[in-house]
Length: 354
Image 1 (cartoon, helix red, strand yellow):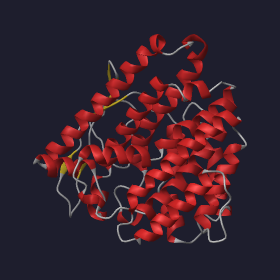
Image 2: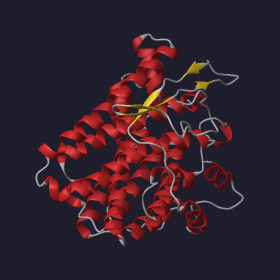
Image 3: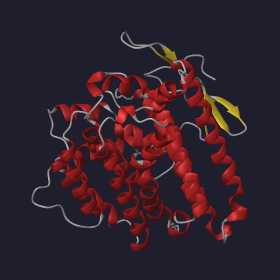
Image 4: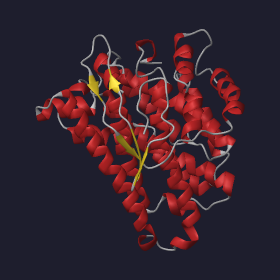
């Protein structure tokens, strides 16, 4: 295990354990913030980066500019490029094809531009609700209306381009997950989100309104395209869906640990500060508790995966597709953490929002 951990450097190797690999925690230390050390955390996958990154990078920038999602020279453009979302996709999808790396990078840019608007505690609540309603129509297959802005039109362009890669059955599952994500955004329109009383409420809402809500079926589309796998029976299996739900919870906790400084500064809800407030803990003890919870969830993911051959009907015929699909889930957990280390989003106020 690396002796040093901190922003700017990815830990490419950790300490091997029964359920994965443990990475050393880092210290969050900023002039206007209570110093706290993040716990050593367990991950179900090792570090990797896609060989397609350099080829994808110019195509990614070209897409977000030509779609008018961002305008060169604008603050949003600088913030999105500073977030290194093409690098993020390459870390998430190390073993997968060029198209998957490209479209995940695009979807990340779309997600963060939208998420930052929805998370803005000063934004007009009625405008947020109207925006969600327009997105719901896009996720339901409708073209954006005349009042749609550049963000909604870029979302629709991506949605239609992804459809071209998918079978009708698989795209239907993806569209349903995207609609679930969009509906969950309604909770970000509620006032005083930072004062949400229950940690479980926060986890459940964030499970549905983080990108993982639809990233898995989005990934399945490109797995099917690249490897010719029959993905709908895998995506729709209840035992596999249970695992993916736990993956989302891990992502929420990891995000709130690394994003603690950002969330405190911007007044957003954070799992760690909710634990601290509602359970009378110090900030350090709340971080440690959140870390133990995330580790338990990672162990649960691995344990549930070992039981799949006895739970999934026709497992042998689906084994390769299941393996690839869960590889995407593992990559989400490890790749996002590696990305947190190199993005400016969680350590520099200039990049706290797009």
